[in-house]
Length: 217
Length: 217
DNA sequence: TGCAGCTCGGGCAAATTTCCCAAGCCGGAT
DNA sequence: ATCCGGCTTGGGAAATTTGCCCGAGCTGCA
Image (cartoon, rainbow over all chains, first blue to last red; front, side):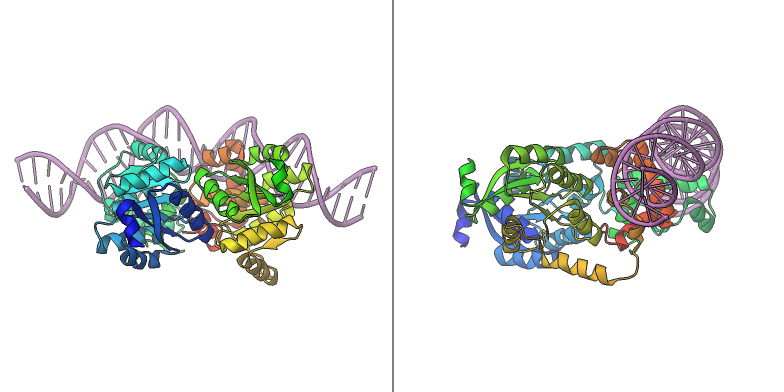
């Protein structure tokens, strides 16, 4: 079957929902130049499938947000730096997007995009270009993309400690007491952490802390 | 076009993601007996499309959570009690499932299901039977056996929906927009949820939602 | 020496949270 | 039929927090 790849773009589909995979497979294959050569339904299998089929593009459709998808990206890129990975999800949080690119993704498109935008993104990524959908470009633009790596690398020791306690459920006053700081300082850290990580919500902050292993839930 | 219905099952697809709709459409139509006669990308349009095409089955694929989906179900059923609605989502919380059936759904399948299970569910629903995927039956079964009142039992439908979106990282404005409520109302729910659950912090709320399976991290 | 970055906090306007309250609606109990 | 209670929806007003600006002390490093 690998002869096909010579005339088109071979794709590995990663998604945990079987029927979603099948739907995308049909949409992609109707394009003529796109060929789904393999599927995987979890992050762990993704690399095995990648190694076995050496696809031109990996389309990672992570419906659930964070960690396992990012892990899969790192997993593949660490061992095959030439891999092209297009993240395809319904989430559009700046933190997630940045993390995905930092982890080595080549593109990021949301499910709100038109089908044509998605297939064009696959073609762009296959050519080695970076691709993202308009809405993603928008959130990133506002967020003013910084070349920093993992989200936690941007944070100082104190910031991480405060984030940990906050994500653990502590109030601002409690954190101030624990760390012998003024409430004002803790508030400022809270704000600083949010701007550094791109989280716009306390909830996003908690999710971030959880996916980074800062807290367990 | 309605002559087709005589030989098969006509389907109305409701989903907010264009490419997802297109994928499902191809999967369903490849079955031979299933025909997608219309699509809608939001709850508001769903009833209009239903009235215009009178499909045998409505497949409601609400990736974005709930209330608007539940509303759409009630909306359709209230005016066309004969309507057969199959909810098709990635969520598998008992609360949601029960709400959906209470709202008048005929079936509930998750995206984790095999494509064959999904199309069979559509056929079952078209015959007027009730249908649900194995995993849904499982969570409902466990739920009915557990006398332990989950924290979620204290919360109403709206509260749960708002908690879900909040824990997912949405801002108050976003939730208000999604659910067509005033910001003030969402704020009040936010407060109410905290007092009902005893959470004193947004972070505690997120953790609570996560442990209840309302959101994944 | 000097810059850069972390840590710590003040200030102040704008926004949000916290409570309390009211009204409509609906289902169940009386 | 009526009342009670709970859900849903929002207003109001005080209290608190956020967002963003600032300065200052400390450290490490070039």
